[in-house]
Length: 162
Image (cartoon, rainbow, N blue to C red):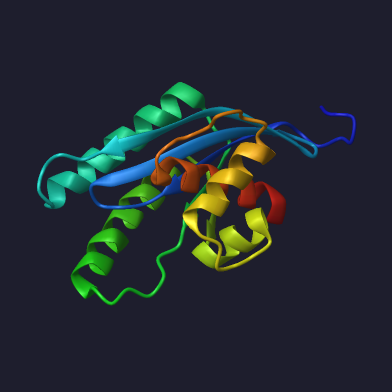
């Protein structure tokens, strides 16, 4: 237990996609947030139902390694490309099902909620998100690819709103 009687949590943030899924893990103790890991799940095969199984398997691998007790997944926002929106929605479904099957409490956040919570501005750009993730997690020269910094931002925002 931490001094303010809040249990330590490991939060898995996920930035969903069809071929690239960013993930980031933080440890939260009271008001303190600490970087654990981040990475990218790349799916090589063309989009098929098999890809959904691959997403499920790869998310399970991350869970097995880091054992998070909470997760946060970015919600899909309106997309002009309906085909892409449907594919990402299906990938989100595979991710959410995997988390539910592992009994991991999951929060879903809209992109502007994440941006507003982490940067103070709901229309912040990728550079602002990356900068704030680095500052909040006290990471010097932190230069991950967008999908992983977004996933960390999702985890951070989840810890601040829940």
